[in-house]
Image (tube, rainbow, N blue to C red; front, side, top):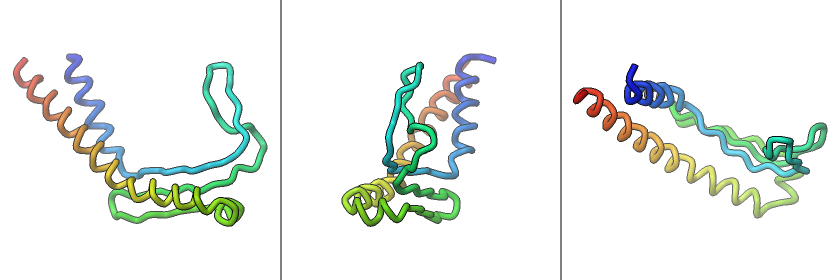
Length: 111
């Protein structure tokens, strides 16, 4: 399989998997592991909000801890603004992948 065809297949697989966008605004104590990855420390309370946007039917589900909602109204608003940007992000990503896929398909057909 040519490199262009491999890339095209990966893009096509990615497009098929784009059914949900997950937006997270989380707070807690973080640590860096040996590989330099940052994540929350284990066995602690994490506060925040998580939203999932289903791209097929347009449903948006948001879960939020009570502490986060009551204590950090400015972060709640930030999360809501990120939710609103979600659809724009999705549309842009899908359009970019489509453009790349069409370009690669044309290149593959010319080979």
